[in-house]
Length: 141
Image 1 (tube, rainbow, N blue to C red):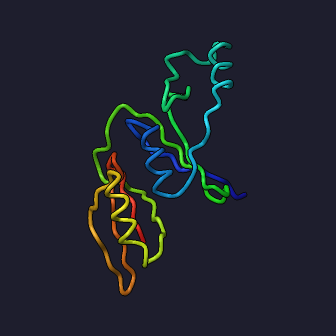
Image 2: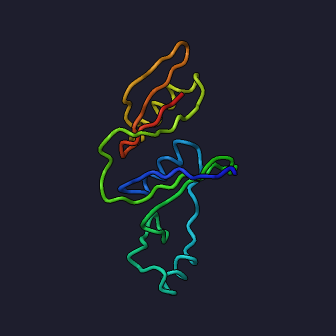
């Protein structure tokens, strides 16, 4: 039996990181449902401490998610953790922008807070490894 999955990224600031990645990938931030959050708090399933205001909206403190605009890719969830990233990722995303667009995307993402870690080549194939603002590595190809 085949399974579906979402990609989950630990983060000390999930909402700003979700915004960064939504912009980086051209994806959409999952909308918040303030009425649902209020119902969960009112019913005792959550507390006000489980919520916060972000960009003028009531959101869950614990995380934020982004989705591909056509729904054709796994959801990416950014979940709150208390500690910053400290070691190299064991799993990373390869973001395929096309060979002709790699340099422009590197410039755009580093201007928004990404950091170039290194560049690699294998035959004619080239990639640039970048860290997002919290240090999570990904490759642009």
